[in-house]
Image: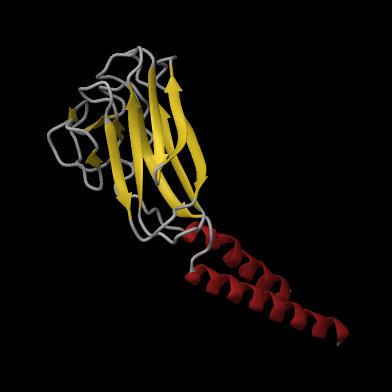
Length: 211
């Protein structure tokens, strides 16, 4: 019985290791600056993010004024198209390992007004995907991709595309995340501990059976 319990405990440790991966994106849910209900802003700095154009960065409450459901911690999101046809919002991510695999994910949606919208997503200078939505249904769509940086830093960029939609509407983004697809050294240590523990438990069980 003790051996079974030990195996269960060690297995639980081993399977929980991947959850330790930290999000390398700063302010990926756009919860800062914190805004009042039903408001948006283009006048405050947005920690972690910069504008790739002369335009400002627009952040607002997802439910109002954007007509989206609340899925981020502070019910806030980025709107890529701000005041010009092509808005660009980007972040330089540091602490990467060259040629290592990472998981990049975010939620994309189009508010219930403003017409057809399109947005290109780049990582380390490479086009990851093109998000587009013509339904204006106010729903979020999950994106997840595997990316491999060439160096220790990489730029993540959301680029609004001028199309038939209104230039100051749409292309909502939130819950942006970049995590290592490979376990970190601490995670490897825990996994090795788990494997060693399972081996010891199995040997103990064999001795009990033999006795």
